[in-house]
Image (cartoon, helix red, strand yellow):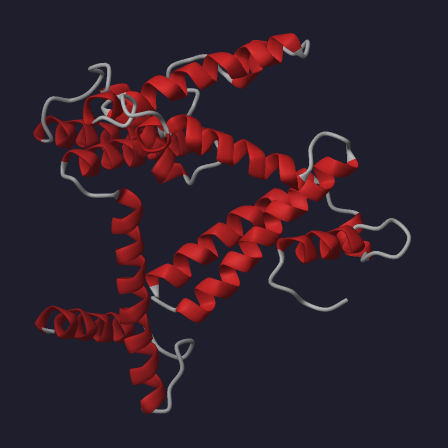
Length: 277
């Protein structure tokens, strides 16, 4: 089988990998649940390539992500649920439906009609999905009918916290300003201290989560994206720690053979140098 720019070749490759008789043993034994973590990982690798502005990597990572879509569609086809073509049709229908101001008639394309159209159409789609579940004999509540239920559970926790807060804020459930949130953070830290004093692991985890949630809320009010802020701090930590490693290595020493005080001194050097830069 030869490679091709045609999407049909990728579909053929995936079908061959999943062939029960001649396919790849690892691919054959996978299911939606086992593949889902890889799908999420590939999406992160796409984001990483974008952050590094590496177009060669971005091309490859987009291919890996596309393969995940093909993989899930192949498994769905085997279960006689839907095929890749159905996935394509569903998303093209959705984009056309959600952009009447682009693809509709002259009236729909007016600026006045475009305003607020997205949320209205999404609300209509949600109602149609709920009815479709009823028609298929499924419990409509399984899909989620609450105001916040449209936010995916699988999102990274910090991102999901942000989206939950943003949506709740649309109906007025929000702090009016940032300053009181600092008091809330201090309150949550106090509760975390109490849980730590009791050595209650479940309570510590619960209170720690409350602290993180409150910090996300503060970041939102300060126009700071928590994921982006933590990502920047991660990079900063890595850079400073690498300075410690390089400096020790230059003097013929290893991390393992160094004391905490030595590493702290080098850390402060890296911190000062980065600020001066």
